[in-house]
Image (cartoon, rainbow, N blue to C red; front, side, top):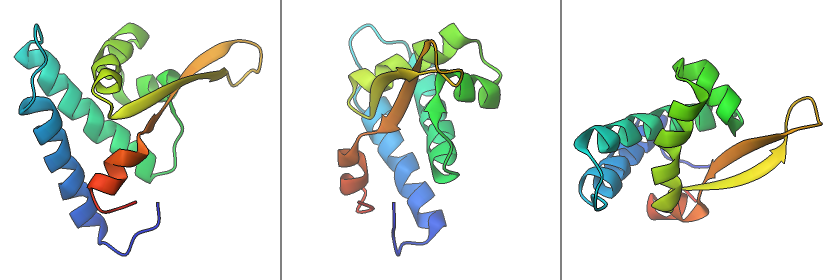
Length: 114
């Protein structure tokens, strides 16, 4: 993501987008705790993205200290909202599979960062 915007402004824009998409547009049956967890997770994922880290369940688990299931539960609503895309890739050993995530390109376009 090449951009001429200052990193501080990018971070603020992502945070505003997270607040707008998650807190201002609750999904039926979603708890306030779930929405707050999504905003926090989106912040962590964007920081990882900026550092060039691959967004896999294992990497996110290592950064957050959360269990694999808790990470997945926090990310699934972001996928459902169209903020993240998920794909199944080979794991680091090359034999099994792993969930990998990336921000949808539309998110960066909406932020003026695409």
